[in-house]
Image (cartoon, rainbow, N blue to C red; front, side):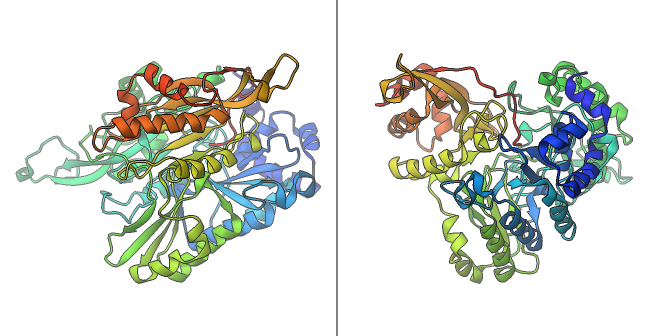
Length: 590
């Protein structure tokens, strides 16, 4: 067993939740917590939804799970209030001026439909939990080697392109796994997504388990059959197909399809059987290859399916008719709901960060302008939706201060900008991300004139190789590096060397029917050379693109050597750097 597995054997990770209350009552510092419980406690604290906060001793990052991204206005208001009251930096760490863009008391919407907050002291955690309990929120298993937040389409129950509303299934699966000691110690994090949406908004292709909509004919006894002749008395039912073994980070893999049809009422048992298979057969020795995708790759999808079927208490039929038609990367803008006269509005939050006070404003606006069914939905692109708005109220909603700031009609770079936590708070982040993504998106929208039919350019930046910002599936992906350059302007020593923040530069990623991971076209690009390089690329793209061709498709069509040549034509040191060894080992983001 690796060291983390030994720590989990010493004490069940869920037991740390009671310990947190004791630490809070005693006002223990990090060093006192470590003296009492040992190094392994920092790992076990993840099961409470808490990460040590980068280099800032005695503060945590706290992650709140939001299954399917669905929040009632009351829940969203509580989250915003908690951020405003507790996610505040002390004076010695900058206080209100800790961040040049966001100041203090902000929250981050993540790519897994969670909410993260920073600067949380241990003595504040029980108070936050008590407040959460009143509205049905939790941080339990927000992190750690267990079932993470279950993803779904943020427009579940709203949009015409869904086959059925899968949110009840998401809630049932989440309820089964949360605080379930039998499945709270898996070989590694276990990521599921469940959607009834034909556009795969839940990103099934890059998750450990991805349930997507399907249809199957069953006979009159309710048993799924293979006949396509409805005259035999068969009837079609909706359920799920399943992809398994997807993931990013080092060793990315697109999920592969199992030959199985899962009725909604069997989804919990099916997911349990997959978790059981992973629990028994997953690697607990080499931490670098213990994700479920490595197990699927090792066994092969057919043998993995057989192992799951042996552990499943229901006899699942073979697959039916797949209903997935494509991929919708975001829900930004004003959209019609299924119910006539109702709209939902997708707001653009660059890099997912906004103040707690603004999130409270959004929650109160949902109650003020929406029906009794109004909700706040978090999306995998770090944006959020407000739902069930009567058409006549949309104008008033858009006039709210937060709505003008997080416009549902942004420029293409702002619309597609995603950033992880980065070195600001993450133990493993190599470069700063949030501020940089925000500034770059705004600058690129000003400086680059894109074709009129190009509504979004997906630009994702991860501060290290762990892919928390999902760079491999973006039009433009960045992976943080420290870069050595030979440039007198940046010189930090007599020899003229300089170590600067930079990144590997990838192009051409996408999910959907033409899914493909991007190519890392250029490595160790100094950060100050990136925008000039993008200006050159988009000038060539605009001139050469075929009608309607997306940027990622053009990047795939053009040879990488030529893409590099175009980038290096910028008046900037695009190819002047050499990657340096860093301490980046993983991630404390999603």
